[in-house]
Length: 482
Ligand SMILES: Cc1cc2nc3c(=O)[nH]c(=O)nc-3n(C[C@H](O)[C@H](O)[C@H](O)COP(=O)(O)OP(=O)(O)OC[C@H]3O[C@@H](n4cnc5c(N)ncnc54)[C@H](O)[C@@H]3O)c2cc1C
Image 1 (cartoon, rainbow, N blue to C red):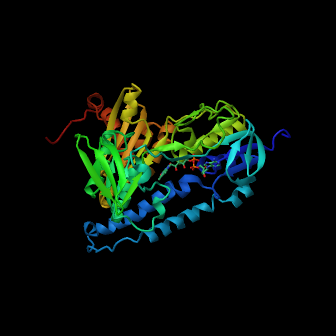
Image 2: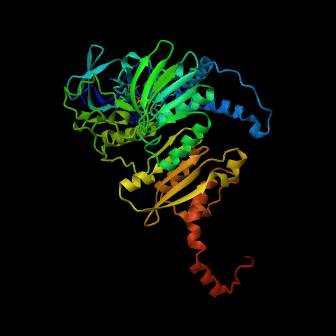
Image 3: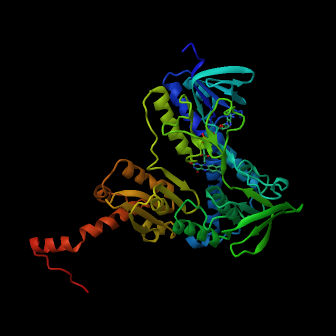
C-alpha cells in the first residue's frame, strides 16, 4: 500500500463515481473522490434526471388541471406560468436529494472528497490543485455533455441545452428543439404543457429512434394531439439570430426548405463523453468520440483504470452507471472477475404516457437475427387505467422460439414502475404460470403484466387438445351459446 496514496481514486462524483466511492470506502479501501464542480451529484441530480422529472410532474399537474372537465369537474381558466416558481421547485427537490450526495456523507462513509480540475501525470497518479495523488486503481466516471452539432450559424445563435433549461428566468413563448430523442421528447411535452409553442426537428423517420416505431409513433401522436409540431426526416441547414427571435432553416422530408422561428432553441442532439483535459493521451488510454473503451469488467486498456457511466458511451442511464460502478467494486475491491451483463437492462422515457423497456425490442431482436413472437395487451382494457382517464398505450412482450421472454415494452401510465415486475420475472427466470397464477391486487395498472402473460398461456390452456382431453376424461358437454 505504501506505494500509492490511495487504494482507489474516483474521478467524477455522479451516479457512477458515487457508487464506487461509497462501496469502496465502506469496504475499507482508502478512497479519494474528485469532482471538478464544487458539489457532488453529477448531471443526473443537477441537470438531468432529477430536474427533468420534477419539471415533468409540474407540467403534468397543469395538464390535468386543463383537463378538469374530462374528470367531471368545472373547467378552470389557467393563468400563465411563472417559470421562476417552477425552477424554484426544481431546486428544492435537487436540494433534498443533494443531502444524500453531500461531501459530509461521503466523508462519514470514509472517502476523502476533493474538488478541482485534474489531469493524469502517469498511469497511477494525477495532478490536482498543484498536488500529485497516486492510487492503485483509478475509476474514470466523468460523465457526458451535450453534443453540439456543426450546424451553419449555430455558433453565433443563442441556444440552451440541459444545463440551462431548468433554471430559465421565464417560460419561453416558443421553442424549437433540435433532436427528438428522450431528452428532446420529454422536454417537448413538458414545455408544451406549460404553455410554450414547441416544434421538434428530428433527422430519423421517427422520434425516440432506438424504440420500436409503433411505440414511438404512439408517443408522438399523443404529443401532436397536445399541440407539439414534429418534422421527421428533416435536416437542419442553418440557424441565425434575428435579434428578437432565433431562426432555424430546415430541409423537410419532401425536400422543401422551411424557415422556423422561435424565442428559444434547445439543442438535444445527443451526448459526448467528458474526456477533455484528463490527460488520457499522455497515459495512452484508448478512447474515441463515443467514449473510453472498456471490456466487460469495465477495465480500460490499462487494467487498473476503469471507466464507467456515460464516459464509456455504452448505456447512458443513471442505473447503468450505478450498475457499472458495482462491477468495478467487485473487480477492484473483492478481486472477483465479475463481468457486466446488460441482457435485461431496463430503461424508460418519461413522457406521459411513459415508454418503458426491458431487454430486447423488435428492432433489436431483428438486428440480432433472433426469431420471436409478439404478445400484447391494451391499457384501454385495464380497469384502473380507465378509472384514471388513461386510454392510450399497450404492453408488448417478445418471446423467443423457446417461449422465454426476451423483452417487454410498456407504453402507458407509470410504465417505468410497471416494468419493475419484469425486472424480477426476467432476472429471476420466473415461469409464466407463476406470474399468471400469482394474485395481483385489483384494480391496478400492474394487472396488465399478468394479462399479457395470460394471453400467451391461454393459447396453451384453452387449446383444442386440452379441450378434447377434458371432454374425454370428464365427459364435458361443450358450448351452450353460439
Ligand atoms: C435532461 C436529462 C435527463 C435524463 N434523465 C434520465 C433519466 O430519467 N433516467 C436515467 O437513467 N438517466 C437519465 N439521464 C442520463 C443520466 O443523467 C446519466 O446517464 C448519468 O448522469 C450518468 O452518470 P455518470 O456518473 O456517468 O455521469 P454524471 O452523473 O454526469 O457525473 C459525472 C461527474 O463527473 C464530473 N466531472 C466531469 N469532468 C470531470 C473531470 N475532468 N474531473 C473530475 N470530475 C469531472 C462532473 O462534474 C459530474 O459530477 C438524463 C440525462 C439528461 C441530460
